[in-house]
Image 1 (cartoon, rainbow, N blue to C red):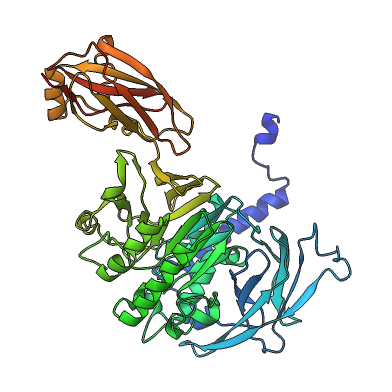
Image 2: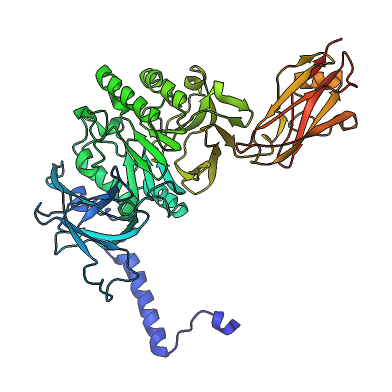
Length: 572
């Protein structure tokens, strides 16, 4: 393109120039004398009752899963429509609509299965309708719309789950709750921009601040916009969904499977969904003070974990097993549910409530500086209300450890599920990375949870030996973690002198501990390939040239890790 074309478009005629001068004069006049001059009174705030009032046009459209997500789908929406006219239409997703009419018989009409009005504080009722599409094909894209036969939503697409395991992604949010109309939308939209193919969105409670606020529920739906109509939503209630009982909005909006413990109070607040190789379990932690309901959930939970055909298990509820803020503590949840998570190998426990970020595991599960083999517990927040961190005291005081924490941040979490791996990443509202890890699991259910590699966690004292005091004829067993499956590592035994031992005691050898030290005194013992979980084991008899009274270390070197063992002393 020439420089001439890059210049601003010129005013073409005298008449055009005069019009521009006149417009400028009017603008100056408006600034100087108009009714909107600086200092004038601000316009009134538009009433919530007007913003959120229903009409015959459908809104608040949301997908909720059934017990058979590969062949059926529930859709709920709000509209001023009678029960006998509320309906939906569905067809396999066509290449085009509009002037391209669907083939004869392609569109199926399905009447609403339920219609429920909810009285609101804004002077009107919001009426929710639910339809269930059945007889669908697995892993198939469909197009649907909802309405009353005259007033229809736009056409919206979703894809059914596969009949068996297939890789997929899902999104997890902590509490939205506050600033729902201003700060939350950018979080929801950024998450969807990062994972537009996500099949599920998990909300760990406190979607809103006031359980029965029509205004806040309206804001929550507006925050996600069209996303809710094409991605399945798995939500559980937080304490802010309760006010003299469960929110009157909850069950009409979220007709989740009625497959929970069987108590009426827990209907559609405690439930599970098997989706494409993942068992999602939702629990209601708001009933901690009710021994009967907690016992019912605990027994039901154990049954689901014991008899679980899925490779991956994700549990979500509101009140954390290990709290990240203040003096908060949930001993009933921790005592009743925590042992079951550990016993049956739950992969992720996704929580909210503490308006901060925390991620960790039990101390007993730690295998190396960057690897453990236990349950991952996460607390997060998506909204704008923030609490200060408590230094992890509720974790360490109860046998757990915090691996990542942050306050004063809004986050979303992206989880990518593969047959042998589960990848988790937490990002800030602006899309920047905060935290992440990779879970590897084999067919026997064994797993490793691996931190994302950094220069700091790929060196240093991470090799495990079965003893640190040996005789000259002893054998040693070496273990190490954090490798890629099949990665080859060389194993060395090398002498360290007293100064190095003293430096270790002072922490003086730093992050590159042992990388070059003693290479001239190193004995190459052999090499090993890491297994499918990134674990490496190697056993050897001490070489004949080790000397009594001297000190040694095992050094293991690969493309990704350069790590050492504690100092090994040969007895005199």
